[in-house]
Amino acid sequence: MRGIPSIELALTFRRRRNLLILVVLALLPVLVGIAVRVAGIGAGTGTGMLNQVAGNGLFLVFASLALSVPLFLPVAVGAVAADQVAGDAADGTLRTVLAWPVGRSRLLAAKLLAAVVFAVAATFTVALSALAVGAALFPMRDVTLLSGATIPLGAAFGRALLIALVVTCCMAGVAVIGLAISTLTDSPATALAGTVGLIVVAEIAGSVPQLDALQPWLFSEDWLAFADLLRTPMYWGTITHSLGVQAGYAVVGASLAWARFTSRDLAL
Image 1 (cartoon, one colour):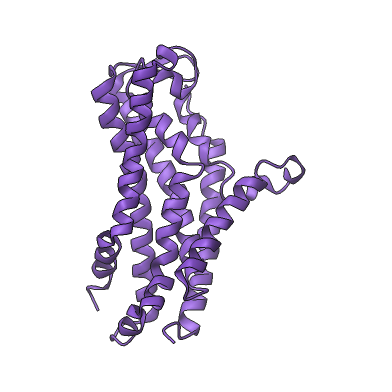
Image 2: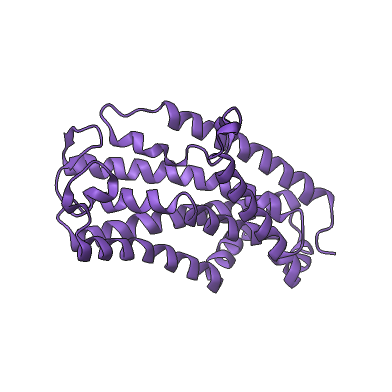
């Protein structure tokens, strides 16, 4: 059916819990901005992102993403992705949808699209909320990068957009992983626990020195590499590796999801 992608998108963005997740993500930059404004953290000095917020509101975008990427964003995206199949199977919706004259591959692709679009929405909710709060509470001026060079505000907006896109690609990888786990069970709670558990395990493994040989291949290892875009010249090495790892996980996750979804009657 031609309307399957739009139906899945509508279902994803009409669910109250998903909208609540976006609201919570939007509140994070508000809380950080107010805290910096009241406490005067850094007073615009220092080299850290949070230390720069008081002197330049655009840094609230970078700081908010840096604060949300290690846990809040991936858990939010993973929770929604994990519900795509398991949630429909649990409430009986999947049985009805599978009765429609639509191929399972196409249905799965629509669910994947919805999960990835939510990843885009989640990332840009944080970024746009931070931009609005930063502009309202702090001056917006030319940006002094982490490397010490200063670039015009217009160019800094371009870098902010680039950073948001890099983060979005990382979260899209999480969405694919969550969808793959969602096809393995018809229990939303189990899918959620599996997805969040995998994220936490990856984060912990990334902090254990004895696993340094494994760490470059963890999907969460270089989520914060976008800081390299706040240097002159921009350094793409770590970011390119990270995006390659995300693509690899996405291919494996999508293949697993397709094999599982098309070979078993998940409606039963």
